[in-house]
Length: 358
Image (cartoon, rainbow, N blue to C red; front, side, top):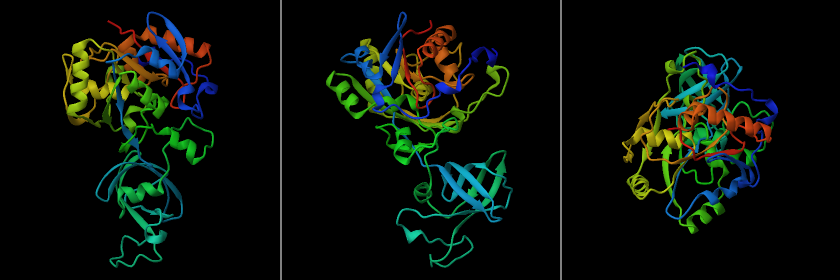
């Protein structure tokens, strides 16, 4: 299967630069025995008592850090994770093994913004700066030894918005790249299908008898990295950590037994469920998943509908949705969305897929 089969023309002007305000006032296209147009809050019309909505409760960390090298040059880090003081980072800027990276600024009110150099053994925190030592480098990824905790480093950081958001937005607007139910820190990118929900909408869903369950998948850069191989089957996903609790798996399996609608919100929720399911049964547990879903994949979890955003051409999320609904159905819906001026990508509009390719 060739990746070019999943290409389409995405005009620059339809890439959303800011979120809809309120969140639930974006457009919603529905695939169910045809194509229907709605406002997002009308998704409640497709849910009934006893149905289950599965949400990924991961929280995006403020992982974009501006710093400088000991030579004075600027460098930008995207922190992917850490083990103690060793931080795995994507680096924008030229570095080599042994490069010292200096972190300016302050962490809230802690230490009054005064830092100590790595080389100093004294506990005197005055008059210094934090210096990170580059330990290893592999392409754009490297490990940096930084004498700060993740919490301290994150307080210096910014929300890592996608590179296709070109407009300057203030910090409050940037925070809308976080879902209202985000709570488990660990992602470097948002599971964007969840951005459309408001607290009021979640309350109304519960009042209607809809069961809301939370699972976790910490989104890494692999979810959004381009597929560079010509053949789809040759692409490999980077592992991402997921966790499903006993309560969540129990409610999903119970709904499946009753024949209720189980709506997975976003491709990350689908990947999580598929990573832990077998023959329609979702198992509680945690682990690392490098699952790559593309057309031809046989779904194992009991999901009956998918809520998603509109994705980049030739991207892994687009292939996943195409595996569920069929490539032609998805491409037809994308053409319809472009015709009706839908907004695409992270801050864009939404699509509810209820027709499964069988």
